[in-house]
Length: 84
Image (cartoon, rainbow, N blue to C red; front, top):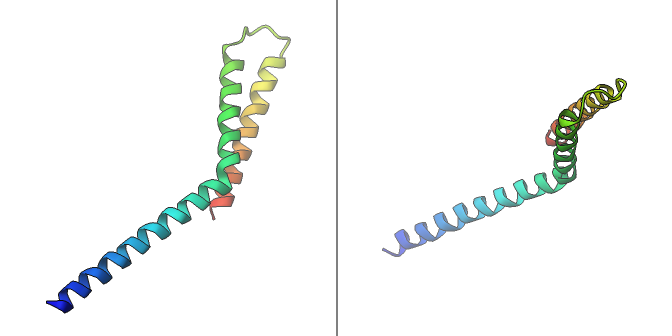
């Protein structure tokens, strides 16, 4: 009976340690990427605002939308590179 109890204790400790390690690793990954994720969200909001703006801006609105899309692509590439 004592052996079974010790096995359960070891099992709980191993699973608990694995869960804590996983949470810490995921938290670290997010913390490292947090600013990039926030930047991407801000860029998406900026693109949506530009999209809702009146179209007649002598081409500047369309150019800004293109640049924001390029910036979103770069941020996505940075997030991907940071996840490796």
